[in-house]
Amino acid sequence: MNIEKALLSTIDKLVGTLKSEEQLQEILKRKLTKKEHKIYFAKKSGKSIEDIKELVNDDDERIEEIYKTACKKLNQEKIKKELVNL
Image (cartoon, rainbow, N blue to C red; front, side, top):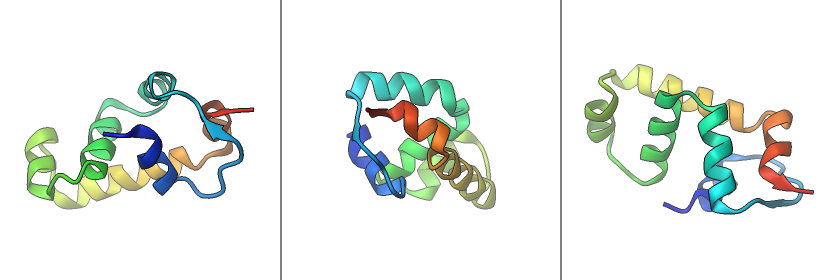
C-alpha cells in the first residue's frame, strides 16, 4: 500500500511535497485512532466492505462514518502541515 498515493487521493489542496513513507506512517499512527487507521488503509487498499467488517467488527454505516472522520482529520490544516516538507 502506497501511503503517499492514498493521501494524495484524499487530501484537498496540498501545499508542498509529502514526507517519506516511514515518516507518514508514524504521523498517521499518532493522529488517527487505531480503528480509523485500519479502516482508512483497508478501504484505500481496495478491500471489500465485508473484509473490513470482519477486520473491525462493525456494521456498514459505522465503517463509513469512521472512514469519513479519518478523511476529515487528514484534511485539517494542522495535520496537513505535519505531513509535508516545507
